[in-house]
Image (cartoon, rainbow, N blue to C red):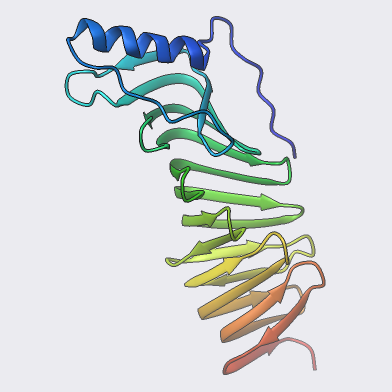
Length: 222
């Protein structure tokens, strides 16, 4: 599934929004915030329906509302509203969050805390990550874009294209290697059996599970 979005009519470009910020700060008698120097590692606002400046309380933080999209390297981040920390190269996104990385990895959630300097995405509440037939479900996911690994520590479930369902308290998934690591109260369910374990590695590409701790298999087969 490839996520695409057209620019809404009347959108504001990043250039015009930065100009508005500078004017608002000048009128308020403050020095306008100095944005980071242009470069490939800078988070860019692509468009939003409107900007609500807050130059009195938080002069370096801007609130964008409606069809908001940010871009960082090969990833785009869409949401209903967002606080953009220009000097920190980071953002807090809220509502219908959708993250698309190179049209191969997609992540959804209710909130996203993104640090552009560390390339770390923290997705919260109703989180779903999809990668070539693999779906990861959790309420709290930290995705490290440098290591290309997603981590969960408060319960998560992975479903692959073979309808195998694996869940555990803690775990991680690497889109590059297709290997998922599960720890604590691990359950692997498929039509033939249910496996319970403490530690398990699972390759979503080959369907091979490697058991690394005490395990129990329950099956109806004789």
